[in-house]
Amino acid sequence: MSTIRILSNVGNAFFLASGCWGDLLLIRVFLTFAYVCLIAINFVKRSTDYEDYVWGFGTLYLHGSSAVRLFHDEGEVKMDEKKEQEALWRYFYRRSGISRLLFKSHVAKCFELIDAKAGEALDTSTFFYIILDGSVDIKTTVTGSTRDYMLVSGESFDIKHLQPLFRVRSAYMKKSQRMSPFVHQDIVATVAVDAKLFRCSHESMHGLCNTPATKDASQGLLIATLSDMAEREYMKYPPLPNDSVTKDMLDEENQLPKGIYATFKSTRSAVFAPLEDFEQPARFLAGSGSFKGIHNHILHTLKVAFLLPWPFMAWLPGLRQIGSLPVPPAASDVDEKTIPEERSRES
Image (tube, rainbow, N blue to C red; front, top):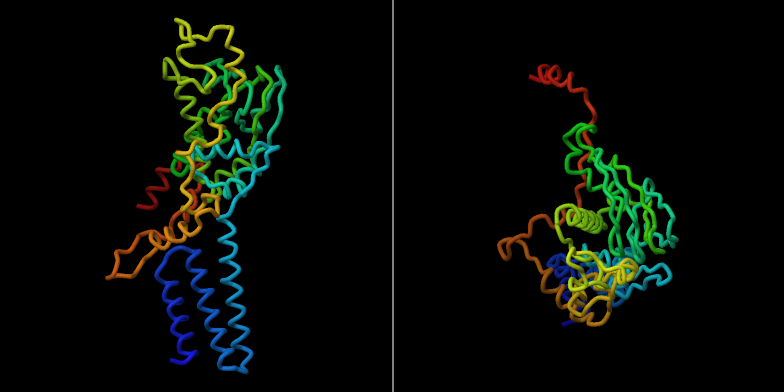
């Protein structure tokens, strides 16, 4: 068998393989090798047609550079320790499973770490906060009802900045009906114990909540915030938010003795602590953030992304539709008096 024929068969095999797997990394790798074979064929034939080389090398660069970039995305992602990005990633990872790369590229830049002294008032009209260290006294008034409570490490506020809160009813109700009472709440936040807080502006939070890559992160943040609120509101004995206190330390009235109250308010929550072994993402999964065991990653991807057309395999519905549709736009405010008239015209 001639060299050209061997290269042609190998190249065709790589072209075929690129259509048998649904993973973008594998597709780029297979097409890269396929065009290497095509270019090699031109060299063996000693082709003098420069267009063959232009198309060959141009396409090789397109697929090859993309494959290199995709491999690079699976490598280690270093966080800025001065900004406590590692701790913030653990907070989001435990709530949404977001990868280190997506967090560093989209979430980390939205949050800044600030130091606040005891007695300092926090701007809740502009920023959303996640408490890293210390504690914050909250006084909130919603629809005429006022409550006072304390937030410690691992808890967050103010929920009105989280965009998914308004999406449930925004597409089919008037603005006056769909706005949650939390949007209009009056909240006063005062630092009780010297604190470190992550804060995100309203504008940055809007971008975070409307970026497809961080959809799960924003929804996880909303669920965590709502969960904390529900526990404070409906549970007689809410779970303790950090590891500095256990139930056996509480008195008969389920209150903290004064001797350990300060420790409770100043201890960092375990949600920011290093991951346990069982929490570590499997290294063979995309986004695990490690080149260790890359061969297992490739083998796993070859297994799970293999997809042949009918009748050889059942098709997987929705391959291109994951995260593709935007949130429906909000309904315009139409005067209710005009609705019957409009309906009569339509009929």
